[in-house]
Length: 400
Image 1: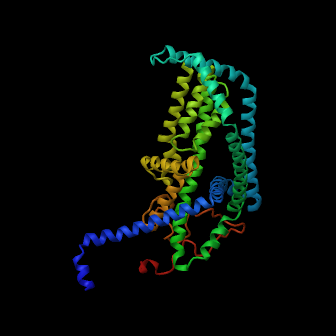
Image 2: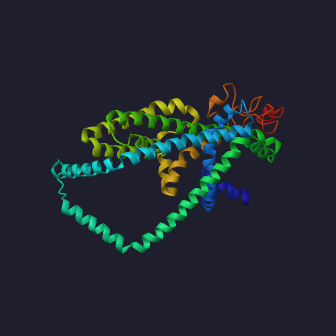
Image 3: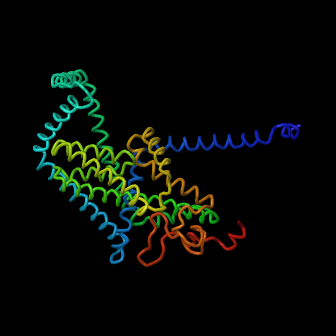
């Protein structure tokens, strides 16, 4: 009877049913992962930042480790990063403090110019000073009516600031261990996996780390170049606060799609307030050209095949990440998607990153994987991790 029932079901329906329950199971698993991540969001963010910091500092620590022990090299690499960032922030704060009063007056003048242009320009808008004062009074009344709720929100924000410091401290703590002994940690993890599956784990994780570290380091380099070019442009045009605006462009480069345009708008408004409409247009065009240079020259040159995602995919995942988790989702969406696709492609048997090995797929050759998660050589020259990392057992090819 069961055989007759199976014969009466069309093949296409059986195939569709099989794929349907698999997709349902996959969707449930992904939803479960997202739910678990939300429950430990602070820990997830700290570990993510730790991996980003480790991917940037690991080459510096490797350079220092050539002449000193690895723990000392790690400490010196972190100290170097703190000195560079601290000096940058000090310069920005000093620049803002020295030009703030001048900028405030210029900004007020720029706002008046914008209103005059809107009122007498081609748009035909009617915006008067009385209307602006009325809007200001309405805003003050709203603040008075909602003072209690604003105080409670401020208290919540203070808690969020404390959480932010806690996340940053935990991320630095993770970074120290990722850089100093990441290879040993990865080797311990591989020891917990059955012997016959270690090659696939090593290959997939190595390719995933190749994408993640390439994206993180590439983003930092591109953001630095964008900031330097913006600083040069703003300095040549005589725009005040060129250094803080350049830092804003640097930060905006870490937010895909929307970060650079927002930085461009702010820089253009400051240029309009200080030097007029012509300078503002030049700043807008100049920063837009910097964005084109980033997208068409710097990203392919620096990141290359490490982040092989179509621009449409990037736009969709950034939008989805923003809807799900705000700015944080927009920042982490692209690297996580790139890593997920790379791991999937590697496990499927593709070669998403031929640069890992020119002769054969990563992790399937006769030697260890060229790029593995935070793996480095120990002080005695031996490779951290299990001795069989990346080495298939004899006859593996025949078994496959």
